[in-house]
Amino acid sequence: MKVLIVGGGAREHALAWKLRRDDPSLELIAAPGNPGIAELARCEPIAATDIAALARLAHQERVDVTVVGPEGPLDAGLVDHFRAQALPVFGPTRSAARIETSKSWAKSLMARAGVPTATARFFSDTAAAKAAARQLGAPVVIKATGLAAGKGVVVALTLAEADDAIEMMLDRRAFGDAGAELLVEEFMTGEELSIFALTDGTHVVPMIAAQDHKRVGEGETGPNTGGMGAYAPVSVATQATADLALDRVFLPTLAAMRADGCPFTGLLYAGLMMTPTGPKVVEFNCRFGDPETEAILPLLDSSLLEPMRAIAAGDSLAGAPALAWKNAAAVTTVVAAGGYPGTVKSGDAITLPAPRDGVTVFHAGTTRDASGALVTLGGRVLAVTAVAETLADAQRASAGYAADVQFAGRQFRRDIGWRDLQRASSASRA
Image 1 (tube, helix red, strand yellow):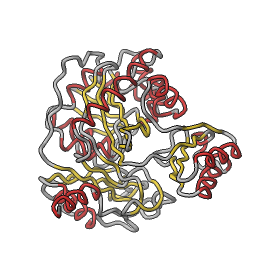
Image 2 (cartoon, helix red, strand yellow; image 1 turned 120 degrees about the vertical axis):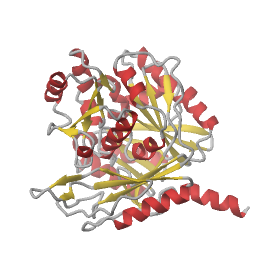
Image 3 (cartoon, one colour; image 1 turned 180 degrees about the vertical axis):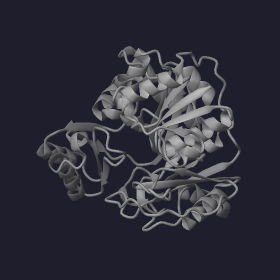
């Protein structure tokens, strides 16, 4: 079998890593890929949004399945283009991808489907947005409605912070067209979970929950990022939580999308806030999340390739077996460039420690210079995942390896998984 992976980040590296383990004989191609993926696949220098070139490659190589990693190509209509040419592809159409790419459309869909979520209003006028923030009161959430690489969300603890976020998006256009409209949203309290589900548009095969760490600093301090790390499993994600997510979030959402004429196939990601009144949707993503993918897939014992192939071929997941998981914990620590999530410098030489048992390094923002040396290329540089019997051991191994990665200005958090470790500590003292 031949598989094309579209994208070049740590998520795509983790997908390549898992698919290679599912079938060692698999022929993998990645576009554009990265130096880490190049150890597993043949990389072609085609941008993830160059849809015509990707389709030509899929035809020339007689690719059996194309797996789309990032949201950009989905928003650009890659799946629509591939399906029109009878090329099997894993991912949603452009209209279905709106569940991530248009927060206003997603909110409207959730209202029609009766899916629990925070109260929100949408604005393109600065004064009106500020007035709405005052009606809700601080803390309040300000979100760009379009794609902003995971950085278009500001949790404003004061109205002054809310005003600045509104001006940043609407007046200073920090996120370009993605922030031409924003939402002013009710602040929800609770713990956040990321739950992935493979779906054929009707049936759902859920994956275990992970927890992302969005803030740049330890103890959830500093600005939001695309994610500084993740861990799985999460103790608050009980079977009852999974059942609620299926019955109140995934199935109604998929039914509403079918009714709207835009059935969703691929990987649907629900970010849930575990509020005192039950789980509520923070946001949906139309693809595997990053860095949660790097924590979840190393724990997956059963095949990911088989359900992905079935979905890409248009087959039903009815009767598909539940996924099997390791009885272990995984922690992913993101090693980022200095200055992230703001302005960062590229081209700094990277020195990686020797391989360690239970630790896998996924490349996020790396490239090779003219001499072939590994150098930085972007804000999130590496995702270091450790799998161990306990969360504490996985955290130590992941943070320990990250500490030994060397490049100028590198930064990382040592406290990924801190909430569950705090719960375990409290339980042991009780």
